[in-house]
Length: 281
Ligand code: GUN
Image 1 (cartoon, rainbow, N blue to C red):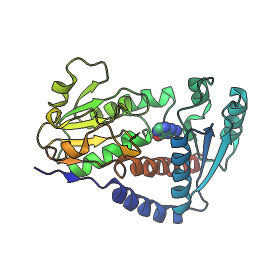
Image 2 (image 1 turned 30 degrees about the vertical axis):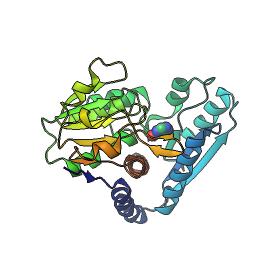
Image 3 (image 1 turned 90 degrees about the vertical axis):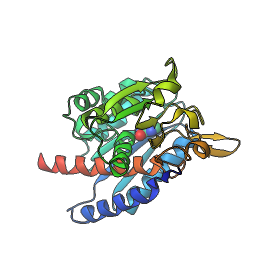
Image 4 (image 1 turned 30 degrees about the horizontal axis):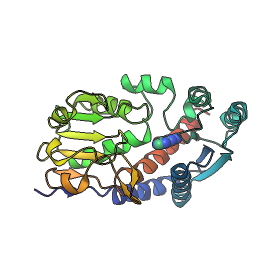
């Protein structure tokens, strides 16, 4: 079997084209504020791509770039100003942040109706109770891909590798909300390979390059690779793509799979936040 290659880049582009049409109908441009601390090379690229795509679809995106050694109170003060600023609809803080900063404190400062990354604790809780206005961008993008490539999610066994607050946990909640049977596994799981092999769907977000091999995968399974690493100067994911594509039913490439979907979902969340804020005026 040769897997279908899931073209996230194309699906994200179609999604963004539709979103651009909806944004054109608005009285004013939605605005996203992005806070970046330090010069993590991957974060610099992600933030540049977010800004570029936002502008492409008619959304304003202002980046606030702090030095690596910025103090927590400077960042908190900026977030408080952005919370008050009616022209700003969404606020995100690019992760990871330098180690000297209290990430939880900073993320909790973002006002709930502008938390378009859904990283606040209250947003995670709401997602598990199916009451969230939106979900974090990456798991939401993964779900959209799965809805296109899995006939019926109901009852399917979804195995997630990774338990981060920004991917693994919200991914589990979203799939559970779709009536999947969900297993959350991680780097310390005993018998990981055998568990992964029972998955009709496998979402991998553990940051271990090419961890998932051909003999880990149930024939025909849909494999979503959230990982992105550089090995010998080449980008690769957490799945050994060259091997696994011969067994899976469908698989995302790295790059060009999940990455573009994350940006599309972030912009969709910002649009939704704008609409909600307008409703509440
Ligand atoms: N770092 C990795 N993924 C993300 C994301 O979706 N949002 C933010 N803010 N930081 C990230």
